[in-house]
Length: 74
Image (cartoon, rainbow, N blue to C red; front, side):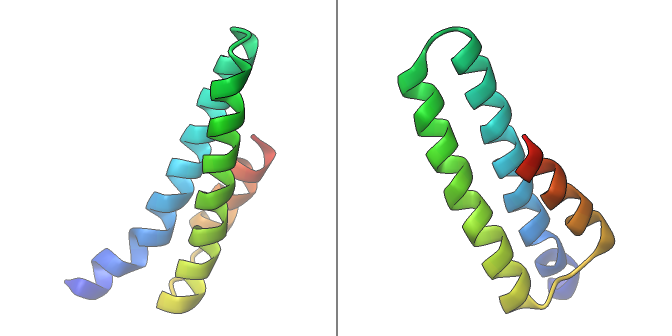
């Protein structure tokens, strides 16, 4: 059971990165640049930790690779 849960932790952090990027885009379109910058920085932190967690937990998956590429684009 623990292996099943730890396998998805990096993907959950990548989803947080994706969510932060989407919220940053919405804030930028609403001309709320302070919050947009804050969410961009938060997304960068999530981006750092998802890669680190994937390497640490040895939790590599094809969906994680695609999800990370999508989050990087956003």
